[in-house]
Amino acid sequence: MSKRVLVVDDEKLIVKGIRFSLEQDGMSVDCAYDGEEAMTLAKQNTYDLILLDVMLPKHDGFEVCQNIREYSDVPIIMLTAKGDDMDKILGLEYGADDYITKPFNILEVKARIKAIMRRAGKGAKEDKENRMIQKGDMKIDCESRRVFIGEKEMNLTAKEFDLLELLATNPNKVYSRENLLNIVWGYEYPGDARTVDVHIRRLREKIEVNPSDPKYVHTKWGVGYYFRG
Image (cartoon, rainbow, N blue to C red; front, side):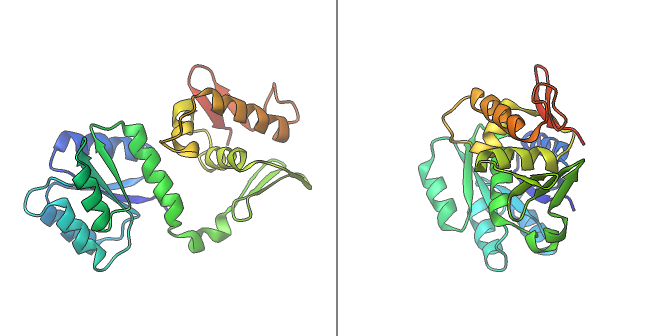
């Protein structure tokens, strides 16, 4: 089941850009351009996350957030004007889970969305039976966070497991180093892309028979890394 997101903003170009980017990641996206439409869609449908601008016609983002919170705990990320701390505080007071300031980087938006969806764990019970990934002689148990090659368990660190799980859950999808840094380490992480390279190298040393000729985690030169499906 693909994740379903509601994007609410009266700037149609922003909505179009976010929608395109999220759909590229396999998400289903609905759009609303004012507060009234947002409330209607949120009431009629089930979403995994709502991206909600503060400045909206008819009803502002705070009213929409407050309205949705009366019947739903869906994760909400508010979009606020740059440097307007009061908007950020109010958004959180009204029940938003996070906020992003405009102008924003779409990679940051996607990283935040995925981090919040992971934390929310929406649908975890339904997906439990499908949380075992098998490729060749490798088994990844996402529930217990254990990895086996044949019958032997590999001792991965938390970040090594996070990297492997992300790549293996999205086989053949190439992630740039920056994207992996945003998603796995978080948007506030002060490190650089070399952090990713080091962890990929360590991960390969543990799961690959020949790390210099990998079977699972491959490099797309000049772009990033992917898990061969």
